Length: 323
Image (cartoon, rainbow, N blue to C red):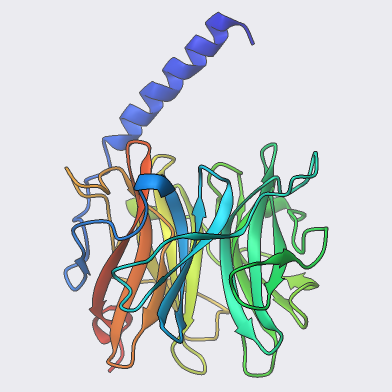
């Protein structure tokens, strides 16, 4: 591509983004029952851009795993209250082998198990993403459990990339993963797979959630986090894209153990806010319900090129529809 062609492509991209972002404030900054902390809680400073958080309860409070763009790695940070966080520690770095499928790593989720800590993560190389597995004895130093990905894009709707694994372990020991698939820059659909060992996965033959008809997710859907509410009821917090440059946190509910999903009437839950650190787009949610029935949603958001992690809170019954 010559200099003139590159200039034309850059100009077209700038115009596209300008037009897309004209829609970023078409919804309220949050659903009425949700309170968003005014300032980001993680990222910036020496960490720079941090994105796609995954939060889990820990013995000391909360542990957050997230992606750090500057080092193309997964980092960990801990907190007593879920609001004030300590120093970040790199727990999984990029694969240094030339041409590796995971020469950059990000978008991870973690479970604590009998054998220790298990991480499923996104590995990226030359415009393609796959999902890998790593393990740790202490939750601070993860080693790849095998050299190859555990999930790659194979089915027509998966496009070129699979990413954003979200794994739960059911009471019978079965693993269930929800993951995003499609384009590498931003995925298109949310999919599901099941496994007996966390390594060999059987994929559902169609997406579980695709773009909707309402403006907030009419373009595509992406990275999700699933909570089990009862034996049959699940809640899926996910990214809804109005276009390539405007995204929001949304919610879908299932009353049949994930066989089908229905979008919440509260959608979108969290949207860009004019003049704030989340003015352009809001991305990957992760959610927990505490012992007092409070729902907490951590997410990352973008203003221009800077992405940071924030927190929103609500009464779980008001968002999820149960007492």
